[in-house]
Structures are given as structure tokens and as C-alpha cells.
Length: 73
Image 1 (cartoon, helix red, strand yellow):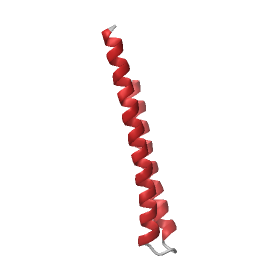
Image 2 (cartoon, one colour; image 1 turned 45 degrees about the vertical axis):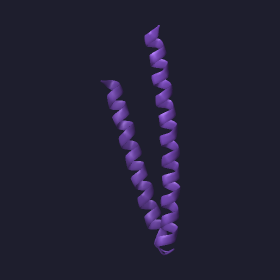
Image 3 (cartoon, helix red, strand yellow; image 1 turned 135 degrees about the vertical axis):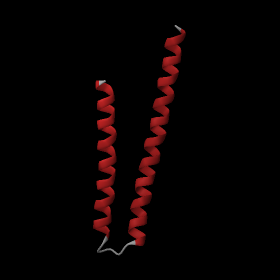
């Protein structure tokens, strides 16, 4: 019984932490978007947006693969 309660609290804490991390990532992404709009000339902005999106995609794919590999073992 006690282990079940601890597991529920642990899972709830992890879900809250993941939600906060997701919100932070969204704010970081929008801040980087604003930085690109301010610092770079308009003709070069699509290049930097593409690089930013490629970086986000690479990190996301890496995290998903790590999660899937951990699930298999």
C-alpha cells in the first residue's frame, strides 16, 4: 500500500516537472525566434529559422530514440 502511494506521488511529481520543462522549452523557442527576428537581417532569417528548427528536431529525435531504447531493455 505504501509503495503504491509513493509511486503515485513520484509519477505525479514527474508529470509536473515534465509540464514545467515543456513550458520552459516553448518559451525558450519563442525567445530564440524573437532573437533571430531582431539580430539578423530579414533576408537571412529563413536560414536561421531553418537551423533552429533542425536543431530542435535533432534533439527531439534523440530524446525519442533514447526513450524507445530504454523501453526495450
